[in-house]
Image (cartoon, rainbow, N blue to C red; front, top):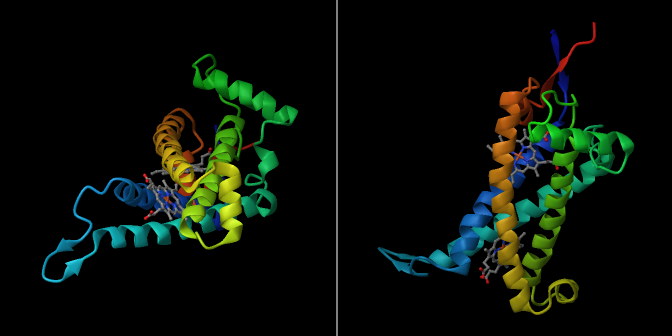
Length: 215
Ligand code: HEM
Ligand code: HEM
């Protein structure tokens, strides 16, 4: 089989991916600390180190980076290249529904060959969509706590989550979605990279996948 390299992901998409992934790492570490500080909130050494202030500061910076990344991804759903557009992977068309079932069969080892695609398979695409919806909820609950003086964020938060306490609890709970997603996602991309020939993992760095060349 002869393969050719084709551009799958734009630079903006790859930037979104890595800003999104790395901001989540920072948000989870600092979020765990904010929720349950594991050391003194003020460590006194030569000078004073305000651990809680520092963690909150990093959390908020990462929170804005995360928000920016999510806005970029939503923009690319409409304005990205063919693979990045939402209709390329959302399982609502007959092409994507067929792909959804064949991917499930491939993942369950019921069939050996996968349907070759330049973009996401429909199963992955469905979970990526759910992830962005969860991210929007996480952003709203975050800004609900961050801007107690803003009537916009207060009414959004009250409507969606209830009181500040409930919003905070849900913000914490949603964090576990991202932790679980990250582990399953990592497992699946490595599994795919081993079983398939398209060079999936390197595509998130260089944007290119290998496709069988039609001769
Ligand atoms: C995946 C993304 C995020 C994760 C995993 C996350 C995680 C957390 C966690 C675990 C807490 C502590 C809650 C508790 O247990 O009581 C927290 C607090 C907080 N987060 Fe996030 N967060 C995320 C995104 C955001 C965003 C986008 C914002 C917006 C600015 C934000 C703003 C806040 C605020 C204001 C607090 C309360 C801080 C305080 O009371 O001192 N978070 N976050
Ligand atoms: C070293 C770690 C990682 C690697 C190698 C990696 C690799 C990849 C690859 C190859 C894709 C494209 C997969 C496809 O075509 O279906 C992808 C997509 C994605 N990754 Fe990662 N990833 C990593 C970490 C993360 C983390 C920590 C997160 C967030 C928790 C994340 C979130 C996503 C999302 C949301 C997409 C879909 C983008 C979209 O179309 O909306 N990734 N990743």
